[in-house]
Length: 461
View 1 (cartoon, rainbow, N blue to C red):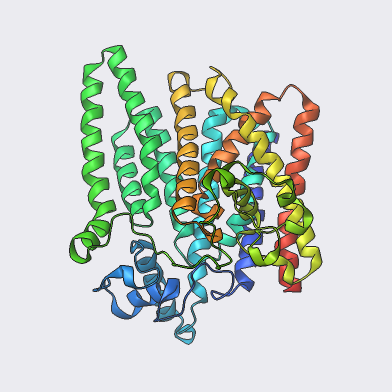
View 2 (view 1 turned 180 degrees about the vertical axis):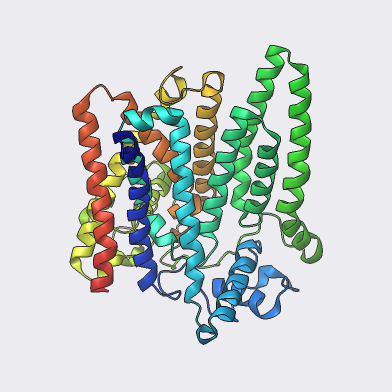
């Protein structure tokens, strides 16, 4: 095996190690532990919605806004129910056991990491920096060992599927932007439609898709290639005629039949005394007040009124929940909290470095992208996607002013952006080997911490 062939094994080994720790986490976490809105079988919540399809084999024939979680689009829940029925048919002794549901999110997250690697290579120059610059492998490791992706691998809700569908759609759009092939249009249309059939947040993909589509159209108009312009317009019509019916029928059905608003979200009405309620804090204070104590060791996890210093700044909460979600993991052992805190500091450092690189990433004519005329549009598309996600997250936090809405999982697809921006930052400082090595050490430290955290949590829980 040549040296180059050995190098090509590195990404596979990184993803394999990531899959191993995620599989280990899935093996010991029940469908009733560390779940968001898990509910109960044949009742409500995530399990209730899945078992509705399992028991009835059809769409809910009632106002879905009246039952917790039933208002979500049906794709994830119907697929989960079908998969569970398949497992029970193959292994009759397992009937009534809902643990196999975690197999699907594990697969979704595994595929997501692989797609992000493909995107990193597209932005880094296919086959160029991948072989020349080992730091790209470190960026892949940073993505692959995200604590949130480990947690999502065992989550029975629709978070893992929407994450995969969102990033897949963006990747397909990048391919189409380069090549403009018809099969790519069909793939993007079906992927976008199915993403909307998973969660309405997929609508934010319209921002980068519009930038890539209109940018490509502008390029052809500028070249006066009217035949290509005509093709692009036809492709746009085909895209909309496929994606819109697949993606919107659920929302329109519930609006027309039951009067459920298109932007409906299950809201838990609580009073001012509720520990999670933040509506009494002015918007400006929540946006612009930053307390360094939020990152003190004692406040490692998301803080509620009952736990001391309350977190109310959405960006601070975003950084915290990217590591520990909305839970406090320290109840099992003090050492777990120490690992959480070190992960928080290491990850925040890397994310800040990536954020600092965004202006130069957007403005430089050359850098980690080597695709000629498409260079700028690609960069602006991923930046616009990142901005759309952040803005949507803040709107959500203020429309529903509770601590639990300040959760990284709602916009977890920005991990793709974090990876690309971090790669851009490292590439910018590539000539200063000391800085690059220091960043590689921080990334390695972060990955070791994540691995150790989920191994030790099972030991001490």
